[in-house]
Amino acid sequence: MKKILVLFGGHSFEHNISIRSCKTIISNISKEKYLVSLCGIGKDGNFYLYEDDISILDESWLTRKVKKIDNIISYIKSFDKVLPIIHGNDGEDGKIQGMLDIIGVPYIGSDNEGNILGYDKAITKIICEKNNISQLPYLILYDKKIEKISLDFPVIVKPSRCGSSLGIGVANNMSELNKCLKKAYKYDNKIIIEKYICNRRELECAVFCEKKVITSSVGEIILNDGFYDYDSKYEKNTSVGIPANIDKKLSNKIKKMSKDIFNILDLKDLARVDFLYDIDNNKLYFNEVNTIPGFTSISMYPLLFKYDGISTEDLITKLIEK
Image (cartoon, rainbow, N blue to C red; front, side, top):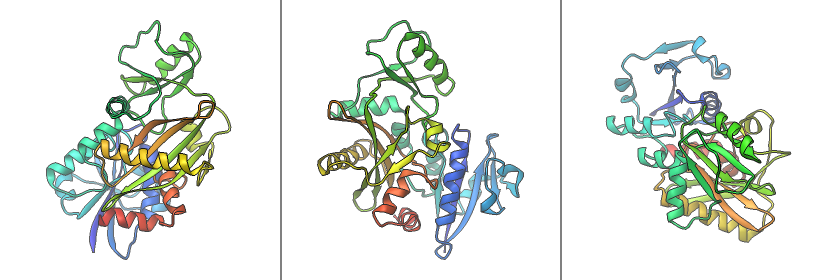
């Protein structure tokens, strides 16, 4: 049997989301095919073998039955493949992948470079702009002080290197903008300011690459009000539409753009690509890409492929065996 190591946690603001994704992975991975171990990275930077019941894995996991791993390199090298289910810093920014590359241990997902490019929204935007991918007007801001912008209000403000819609806000004037910037700077010192579409649809497409790049059906995030922030994603049970109620032409365009973006950034294995559709002007815009998409029970990535007939267990098996 192949020895599989699932990594979760890390220093990220998305530490707890990583735990939720990890529970889904462990609950759906084939125990008949794989010998699975679970390793958490504490916010102290240490690695711990989690040896307790998966049902009680939560943000208090370090109080459970765990064992600190002193020689993490030697430990990881004993596995056939690693599943780095770490969202945000450490996992989606290429750090873990770089370490695994150095010690020669295979893993699922994009390599160090792909994760760096996909995680930094500013870099992603610049590369996609050079490749004629349609995007909303945006600014990249490094300095905390700002007196005016070249974009028309309203605008949306978000950290460049942070996921799960953390630290984002919508501003209708300069006063609100500076309040949003103050919030966003808690998560990153590089900020994206982008034109905000009030009358929009938020559409997502899952990508999986085996021998070739395939795309899922298109799904839609259905918001009751406001925008898709952390609370909407994980606390308010925002509903999803699978498949999205859109025409075939738009669906095909989203699938093609998803493949194009996946290839432009030279991504591997899996990704989720997010889009914004301007209802009033009938225009589609690329929003962002996630190189380690959520695998929680309500996450779009596994749900989209499940709709297309690929169970979460089969999806995980395909990722491991690739």
